[in-house]
Length: 172
Image 1 (cartoon, rainbow, N blue to C red):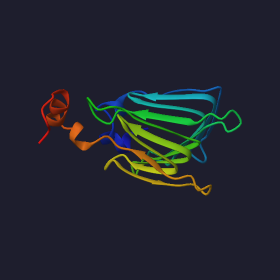
Image 2: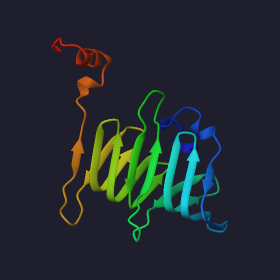
Image 3: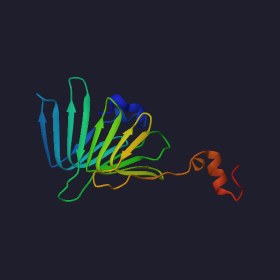
Image 4: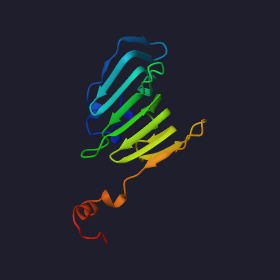
C-alpha cells in the first residue's frame, strides 16, 4: 500500500502487513478496484485510516489511489493518521473525502477538511498536503467560509528555542 511513498512514513511502515476490517468487501480484479464499506479500519504500521467507505485502486504493479469517504447521513468524517518520522508528532487529517495519490505522495482533503501536526492546524473546504515536501495548500469553500490556520512559532520547534521557552531568559 505504501510501496511508493515509504520515505514519508516511519521506517518499516511499508513492510508491515496491511490490515483492513469492514462490514463488507467487494473486489473487482478486472478493474483493479477493492471497495470496503461499513466501519472501515485500515492499519499498516503507523498508518491508520477510518472511514465509512474505502476504495483502493491498483494497476498491474501497485496501488495508485486510495479514497476514504465519511458518512454524510451520520455526519461522520473520514480520518487519516500517520507518523512521518521517528520522534515526530503524527499527521492527523479528517474530511468528508480523503484521496491519497500514492505515486505523487499527496493527500487531498475535500469537504470540512482539517489537517494537523503537533500544534499546527489547517482548516478549509479543500486541503492538499504533499507528504514529501510537507507543503500544505488550503482553499475556502463555495459557502465563503475562510481558510483557518494555527501555526506554532518556529522558535519553539528548535531545541534551542525549547530550552529558552523553559527558562526565564529572553530568547535572542
